[in-house]
Image 1: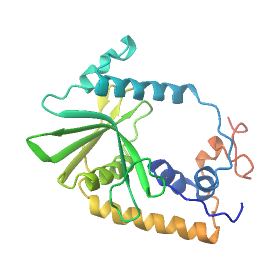
Image 2: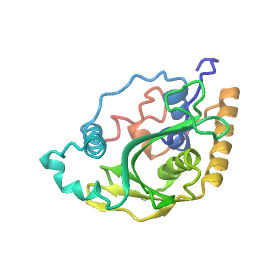
Image 3: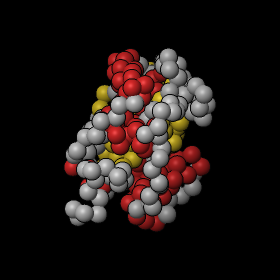
Image 4: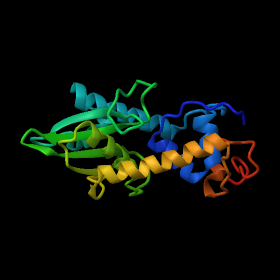
Length: 226
């Protein structure tokens, strides 16, 4: 690893990779010295589905026949519905433009966001998933944090995962703890930036090593153990 200190823009994907393995996250998101691997069929399908939901909600474009059964997840009565809402905050937690790389500290995209004119203090976010069920609220907590910072009148924020493979909404998560989530996020960012300063990114051998793209790591099992 070199001694350069690149600008880091944080996201749920970064934080998830960091928790899994500091070394992997550093190579993938900080040094960015890994070749981009080919898209799997699962990844391509995920992109197709998210684009279809975005077009259906934001532009009114009908679903293709294979996705028509999910029409029930884009009509929510009196709620205003928006898809692929881009949210971002700067180093002080103030909302900023998603694409302003000089200011953005954390950013993300909300797959589906709902609110009502007669209940401006309440919002719902839905994260569309095409894979296996895993009710970990971390991703929607982070996105709800940035939504609450952008719209401080939204004091009550709730969220669901939408499990398309099972054709059902997941359980409701209360995501209203915006200030607490920001404090936790700041603490994690401080840890990461201390590691960057020290150039210390320890490896963590774990079950995901068999799928890792850091092929020069001694723990890498990609292609060997399957």
